View 1 (tube, rainbow, N blue to C red):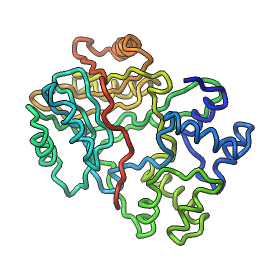
View 2 (cartoon, rainbow, N blue to C red; view 1 turned 90 degrees about the vertical axis):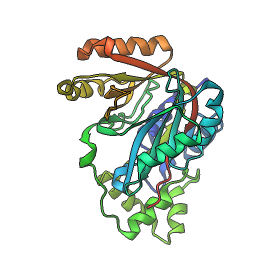
View 3 (cartoon, one colour; view 1 turned 45 degrees about the vertical axis):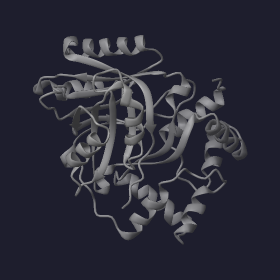
View 4 (cartoon, helix red, strand yellow; view 1 turned 45 degrees about the horizontal axis):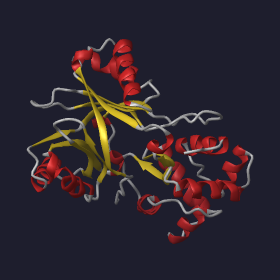
Length: 329
């Protein structure tokens, strides 16, 4: 897909941070030296070309009272398509991929903290006749958030590197107004001159107050960012691998922090293990080819001192579902 420099600069900016302003497209136009209408036209085209999936908030689920996990299912090849369809219809499955491993189907699941996650995973496994299931919740987050630099003028990448124990990142008390704003904000942003006016009107709220509430959600780390979700495959990042490392417990902290500094890594977590899955450190690697991802994985091992023999790389073979969860609060 051919993108000119303005498109690339626009994508660099809005995947990091879309302006929470009364006239956000005009604000973007000032940065790009083009008019408000031209910004909207370009975003409309990038959506038509499926480069931009949507523009909206990324929330911290734990601060909204949700728990999350990474799950995997061992499914026979002839059942894979049907199984993927069943998993992808779950309302709180955000990502679902087929990968080149005996555990073929991998997905992320979010549920209220009061729900029994293990029971739900077992139920899903039974519904697709999985031969085995994995439930691998995060213990610690080292990095979260994809950013694909397209070159040229860029805005700084979002604050994706953070080190926090999952148990410390607990839900916060939300006022009725907070909840109303969060529930209303979770939609693809309208492409109009003053899009937040349209959203705030539905809440009978002044737009300035609405935007102030949004900024407060960012400051309280309830909302991680407000940004565009980008289809990396359309931008040449056609290969991605989930790198799973078996790391000694006393090396996880230093290795995770080092891996988080790699720009080709979008996510890095310490995860729980189990008897059939001993890998405890996960990193998502993105590249233009499989060979690029392999080279990055080797460089990570070299820079961190991790044992290459204690690493497996699971390459994506099919994107079944990728979206942002609609959290009801």
